[in-house]
Length: 526
Image (tube, rainbow, N blue to C red; front, top):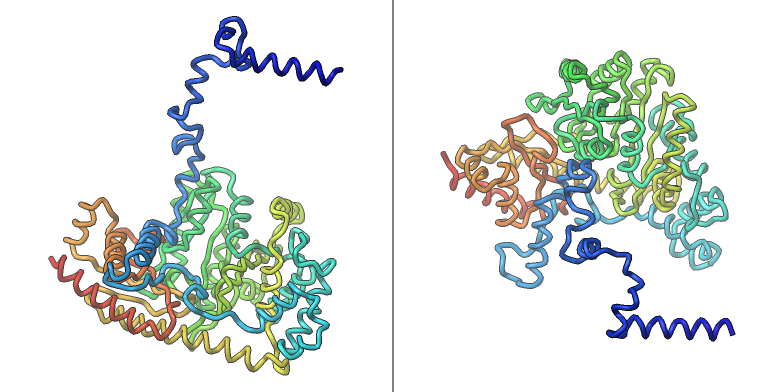
């Protein structure tokens, strides 16, 4: 009976709501909404979210590596598909970002074998697997699966990362540096970028907190400082001395920031440099460490290009290694080192693996870092596995060792040749100077633009190096990042150019670039 009564009431309500005669007598079930409220809900009204109402920190954040020039390149790429032959080039060459595999670099075989076996462990016991995979890849997969709870690569892990993989990374760091490393100091992350964000969240309390950053810098730092509401305190690298880092410049900028009421919390060092490609000397590193110790600054060491060294007279030394060799321990300096599987010779950008090694923090602060890591649950397991492999590759005597070293050395030697070819090409051009790429994946040539070009850029409401990069893209299909996206000494103009296009394409890229530059300089000659 209750159900029949409910159905009858429902029919009466619908009939009264739809009947025009009853509209005056029966109120709409939505009659509590005023006419002004209804107008506010109309599609023509002001949107709930607009540029005026979103977080202003997001508006302030910029990331030039995937900015205006890249957006235009993607439109051109679609146009090339729709209208073949419509442009003076037949492909877009993305020289804007350190994304090796997108430009043809092949994955390292051993790493991918282990990943495949870990993700499909049921094939490990099959006879045919031994004919397809190397014995050490099979053994390594078993070792890794044994430290993963339930051997489940699709499950969440400990928020800091799988303990056995952190132990493997710690062993790799200890082998690299010659000093002990504790697995409890390792936080596995989805690449280095989330680790940097975590440290900015920890250190920045308000716009009165500052972070000393190199200029030029990788825009992750300026973007993350902006997002977390802090102040970027720039220190300029010296282009004339090969992008040297001068202690006097650090001191000057620190004192200037403090005079403005900014509490400087940390110093960012990128070694090898991005976008500048320099490799710090041991003496320079000691000066940096002494400066941070004296000024009570957290040292944030971006060391993601540690494998990418192209000159015989330089080698990579981690800042932690230098600090320990100076006799400094956890009580003397707070140091966070970042590593990523996206760079090096491995270039596994899409796997999003990396870690930070956190040393010199009290137990209660480390608990807060762990809490922040826990909010994200955990980093992806494939990235965790790759990070452990990168820090513990095949050793002499392993079945894969010879093929692995051939792949690794082949990639790094080719990168060195590409860097030298591009460096020589830039320095051969009128109005272009380019420092040597000692490491990393980039060149940062300075373009001495004619006054007419600068005036033309202003007339087009564009920054001069962005104007140059846009013209380069439209004429050649080559995508670069304007130096203004990284910061530069005022009045100077640069572009960042990756060395990652395949070696056989480098001559054609150089030829296109030279033709464009010569035409550009002639067009705007003073």
